[in-house]
Image 1: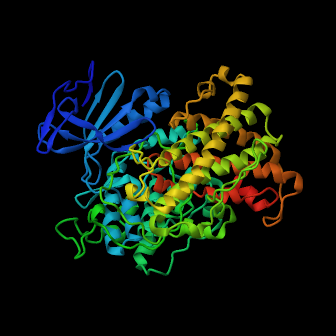
Image 2: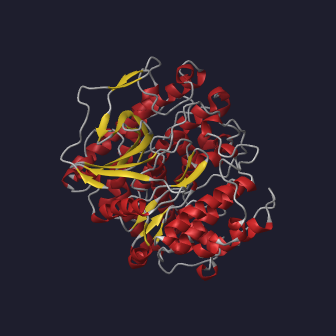
Image 3: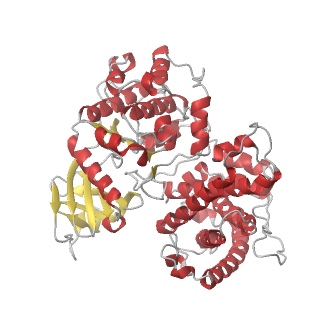
Length: 619
């Protein structure tokens, strides 16, 4: 099944004709895809909707750039993914058709799932009725049982990795799948997964077993029933603390059956010895009860109706922090190496009852000062004199668009404000501090440069931020106010970037093997920038943590004054780390980034507010 070819064939000047016209397509053996049919992307790969030219059936074509697969462990993960897909034969697991390799790329051809994923389905519905949730659960358990019988564990089960094909749930994304014995050998040195769905043992880097998959299934079932995960936090440390010290609470509303409660409790037992094994999970009464098949025995209301057809008002779901994938100890980037197929929804979806950012704006003086133009006086290099706009002056007609732009502006404002505090601190080495200041300055320039694309009302460029009714929005009062504020921010932040770039040149950062490639005026956003930034963030965080050895106190007691600034800097670095993670996780989906991040809350934070309990979560 694994083919090595000397080159990638194409239809050079040929065109594969369709009924509606013609298009140039790339060909891989008897499969083809069009470049503009991209349906997902990640750090080293892109996924396209393709076609089997022999049958004209749709397929998914995952194109992995082998130049990005440099480390041996990354190559091993790719090999594991392919071997895992080859091993399985289940209707509830995404089917592998072919694998091809050229000098530059690896191509993985799989079945195409036509209706999105469970994550989007939950978001659109708010929660799922128990009968339907059980049917989905049975499919997922069936898939994991197939994996278990073949000796594999998945290690990244979550709603986004459960695709939907003609109403049938299918487990996907086997990038972290591995034979169980290899996971045991890797032990503490290899930690992967998505924290909100990781077992406490995996979160504490005690290794992965099949019971980690069982825990993840329990979390997914809970999320289907209640529209949120059982434990939420803003950092891994806080998440571990919540799991270890808070009892599992199953909400009384909506009411669920006793057997559903029993299944959740047995999957989410913190004590791994008391948690179900896969074989035991398969024989739980909720799994063994007569299953409703997706077609023959569908309930009256169609389960898994196509996401594009949904128009169901949802209750505002709890913001789920730290919902990302990571590979700790493997690479510095706390994010998945790639993203599985996600079908872009063609119809405009109306955002219903999403009050999170609106409420934060109304209660936050920082957010209230995000946009109103005012005279900017001459200040120090890092002092923020923000253009201000009262929230009430922003029209709610384009609320979703405004929230997207607010989140990007506040990303910049947080970095600029935090830079001021970082520049005056002496708790990390001068070299690391100066490199962080340069990276933050460049990150601000990258973001404001993107925001500046909305300034020209006649701009015919791509709608970068995927704003709703973009042509109509450009004629609105909201757009006018944002444009005025962004114009001022753009001037201010680009001048700031020029200064930090000169300082970087003066400090000869360009000679540094790692950061040197960034010491230029290229402000195109790319993942390699964030990867390098994360390495310096990790280094600085570890350096600061040395200040807090053997420190203890009552959780609600304020830290002594001499520890307030180090803890504030640690908090800010963690915040920046999470913003980067959310950026990479939601690379081209700015609405999801806005919902998953809260840069405006980072802006509000001031030195002198940290207590021992908050510090413990950061450590």
